Image 1 (cartoon, rainbow, N blue to C red):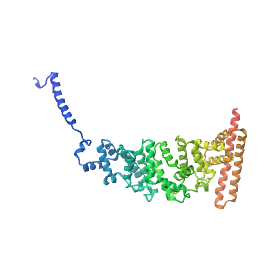
Image 2: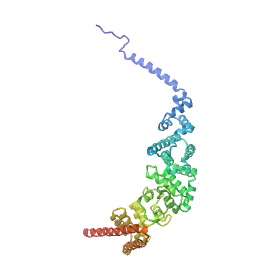
Image 3: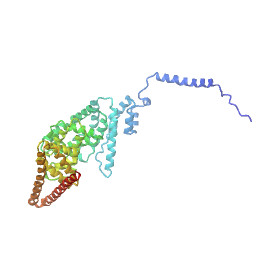
Amino acid sequence: MASRINTNFTLNPSQKYRRSNHRSSYISNNTVDSDSQPLSSLGNFKALPLEIFQIIIRYLSVKDIGMLSMVSKTINQHIIDYISTSSGSKRLLLQDFHNLGLLGSRQNSIILQHYRLLGLLLKRCTLLLPTKERLKYIHKIFAEVSCFKFNGCADPMQCSGFSCYGVFLQNLTAGWDELECHRVYNFLCEMTDLSRKMQTIVFSKPGSAQKLELRTRLFCRNVLLDHWRHRSDSAFWLTRILKPWPIVNQARLLYIIFGPTSPLDGQVIWQNMIDGPTDESSLRGLADAIRLLYDTGTKEWTADDVISLVDELSVVPREWLLENNARLLILSGNNICFTFMASKAVNGRATELARLIVFLALVCEKDLYCMDWAVKMMLKIYKVFSTSGERSNFLQNVADAFACVLMEMLQSAMSGHHEEEERNILNLFHMVHAQANFHKEVLYLTMNNTLST
């Protein structure tokens, strides 16, 4: 049976190409016609009323709205208008900052992530505005959120509002140059009157303005300092806080922002470094801040600046116990500890330096650090002295300091009140062991050097 032949099919290539060319010519003509008219920057959204457009936005996530805002200027403006509406601000400005129940940590994580994305959204929406106008627009929106205001929240210790503001600020300013970030800090100071508040707490008697100290600490930590991914960014913002003030006030501010606080009400504990030995947790924040300024290589902070700040900090609000001072130096790291002690050696403060070495040994004994570290630190300081007479005098001062501190502790243990007796005896016990282990390490070092030669 013969197969049927399709009489419409042709093997002539020219006819096939003519047919194809006819079709492409039709498409091309239509394209030219459509391009000859100006396209709306809204695209297919042009046919939608603004109200419908805003309804559509309600179904998009914050991340998707941020992507949509980059489509065109017109859409961007419509999104800005939506954010400014009561329904838009209500949806985007979540205010569940006090939900600290069983799911509190998970809820807190969700709201922080929301404000991270909101920072990116408003960064894109305000991309074409000058920095000052961007900040004014954002401040106008955030003015509705009481927990973002310096004195807006009645219970700031149980509120995540400042933390949300902080992660928002981090994403908003990511990639901005230092000049723009300077403007951000100045704008925040202007809106919150932060400089005047800082002036009040640094010139007042410590603890006389407890609520203001607490709010300043929370604002500086949660909004300006704690959420940066890079240490250089944290150093930049900490520098903005400290540098406008004389070094005495810098030390006071550093203690307020990073010093020990009460676990009950968050108030700064001013007597902690004076009344008795404190633990590492009370000093960790201060040590981290000092190391931040020293290690990041910020051009506004020289080594001498940081060492002077540490020296000034040790008398806030009054002179610290040497044990607390030694513990702070250990936590601050080898470089800061050596530079601090070397400056005393250069300035002829050998007696004070010797006592500090004794308390470095005591902290190593109490906190279970290797005692050879204290001996090696003493050896490095020993080499700072330029003459043999200065070195011999230094070693004699260290020996005398051990004896003097032991006698002081023994007298305290014998003459103390009953409730203090046990603590003083324990402290004396640690000091005796510290001296024994310190001299043991000195002997090891001496004998090893003798055998090696």
